Length: 218
Length: 184
Image 1: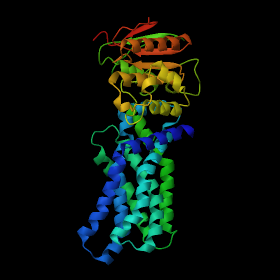
Image 2: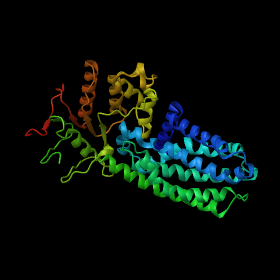
Image 3: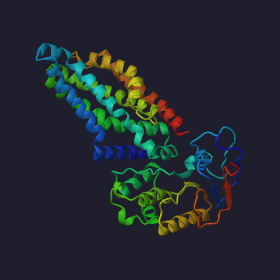
Image 4: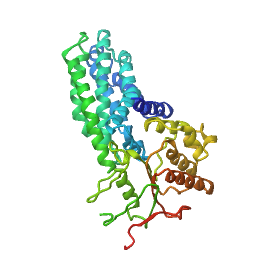
């Protein structure tokens, strides 16, 4: 556990010193939300109806945008080689990297999204369910992003491939996420489904992503 | 196929010097030993180490890329590897390549030779049985070269194994010299 914390702490430190990936994701998120009402016109009822969906799509795309970087620099500078030779199983190292991505990118976006909702007339009653659904859903999004990043780590311009590979997996997150956000009930079946997706990802994705990374290291 | 019919035995405290022209498979052989590759046929075994760990987990592998994060300081880079690999002696690692004075500088400011020294100082961070060094002398000045040789000598004297791929002559006499790709 202490060994994993070392990896998470290093990634957090890198994210705060470099800022590149995180800044891009947050900037993209804000841009989408600011431009949306300008593009759709000032129809308040229309905006209120589409607000949860728009916020979810913005979150999804922002996370996807930063996905490519998760393993790239560690692969290029040989850190991944050394990690594979560590006493920590690569699966857990992947989990730690995904956790760091969640803490630096997905979670801040999920926490900020309800507030950006004011810009597109989000129903105040939906703030709490939306926030909760996004926090839970962002876990699944980060894990899926890590999977996509692992599968394309050695490919130049892997970004396009990440999008294509991960898109089908993001669809259920989006459907259940939006469904859980638009009702004023806090715990809905959709939210439970979203939590199930996150938990399944927590177990399965480290195994899949580590297998992909090992294949590249060989 | 990179190479065939490669066969060697290395005893405790012995140094293997790996030689051969570019592309002969020196790096590939080191990666195979580390377990970062699958040989098409053949076997690499380590006797006397831990039975539970793989050879890679008992080895230091110094590749020609340097596993260094430029935004972090020298000491933060070392501390991460120490923590991640299960505890290490930071002071010894800094001293091994005379990096004390640079400890608080961001690694982005280091020169190529200093980066190499930082990368190699992982060897002194914590003891591991097998050292796999891929062109470790690249970019090192004479003083650092001496330090590296001292480090390797110390490692061998406590019964460690070292496999060094190199083009330049080492100041150490190799117990085994393996020539790859000599025929072509």
